[in-house]
Amino acid sequence: MSVWQTVMVIGMIGLVFIMIHKLMGHHHPVRGAVLSMLCGILTLAVVNLCFCFTGVDLPVSRLSLAIAAVLGIPGVTAMLLLQLLC
Image (cartoon, rainbow, N blue to C red; front, side, top):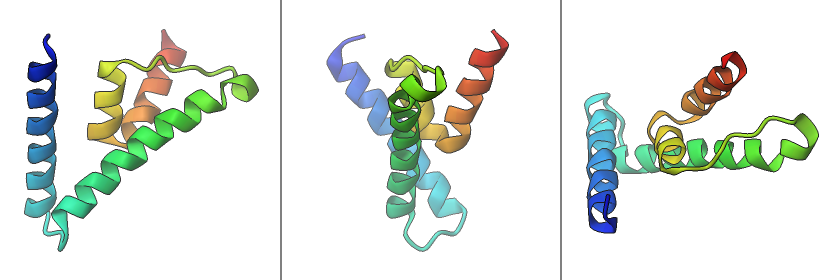
């Protein structure tokens, strides 16, 4: 996938996420969507930073970043559970 296609996919996911927040009745849908995405990505970063203490490592790739951004903290938790099961 080219860089342009990746940017377009990320933009579309962001717009869908903002629309979902708007439909849910949030007063500030853009701020809510951005904060949710940041929380997911920061959670992924914290899990990887704590690797030396916990031994739990999630590989950072486009897919894991997309899951962390779209699903937030529950997405990172689901990736951790899937890693433990496999």
